[in-house]
Length: 564
Image (cartoon, rainbow, N blue to C red; front, side, top):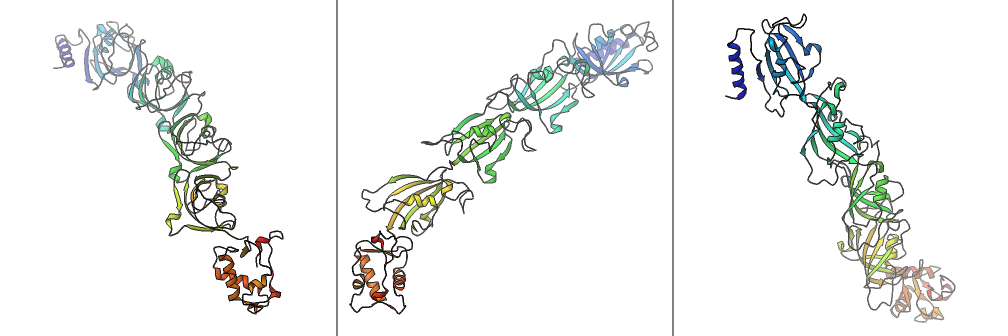
């Protein structure tokens, strides 16, 4: 048999031993007791409770806090209540219901009270306890959950954003930020909150959950707050810290991964391409370039991005990864961005730099291997064969000549490749290898190309495989030595004063073989010679005579480059 049942039986036996109306002590019937009772009423405690008061004899109601529309508030054990209630309320729990029977000598005695309670009346109070507190109470808080790592906790003068559910001690909800789908945003420790919250929210980490119990005198006190918080109400706040910053905060940068051998870092005026994940301090994502499968591209330090990011993007290496924490006054401030970013939100960016360049950058050439003998170097109009790998600066391979059956072929100066690659292929010896960094204004520009992102810096790994020296633009053949004089006699191999196509072709091939002349490379030899012959056969009779022969000059003084 538990103590409550035993006490109840004792009181009932005492009542039974006396004639009705002559109870010697208070009779307490605890007919509804909560399973959990963290605190019981003690002497000098203040309590707030509802009650219905009836007469024992006929059950007629003489008073009710429900009828008055507000709970009754009093202090226990100091004579502010009738003696029977002072005794009957002891040990009571919040949300407990009791029926307290008070004999006349512990109520209003032989006098009664006016026309409400007659003399010698036994009174029955049906009580529901709503709240209990003491003037010695302090703010209590209990941490429900806390993140494993906490680099910063809330302090006075910080600005915080938090969610909360607010209930009375009895469990009745009076407010919730979740119901409004918006955090409560305020300064901490500056009197913008009730005193108990100013205290209870101190020392919290972002992501931490707390239950904070605030006595009435550190909450809304005697006046309460509107219709939801009655006077002298203890408040229970379940708080989740979402965000914290201080108006004096600056951008915080943590390097997560730094590439080795970084020879250049971003400065104001550079153009940068980077990937990012954007989250709030509690880890909730709000944006990601990865989800769009496209880097974010912008100028650095020129006001095209929020101030905090403009600052954080300086001093970076290509390939570097950083975490950037930006306070709201260096981000989107109190206004936020629509439904995407709430006002006064701290933003966390995990960024990965893909590449950067400056609009004034030239093509950068690094020779990685050069043969010992290099007598001839590539130049304008030369036909070359070369191997290449084309990658982004983060190592992503875009194209490779190894994907094809043979090396790539081009004529330098013929606008067959991007300008930067043209620059990188000039001055190479056969067997030479180079790394060539090409900024986008020397490559595919802002729009990119098939498989090449816009504004991408490209890295070419080159190896020159074959070189055929070329001829000036518009020429099909040039002399490499002295021109035979007279030229027609040299052409007329059989001395019959006329030169048909076959004889012309035999002469030109002989000059090339003996190193005295050079044909346009990369074009069918027979076609080139036929075109040269046609140029000289002015009457189109299939043979050249001396009067038809004419030398074409590129420049008058450049005799060595004359072409038939």
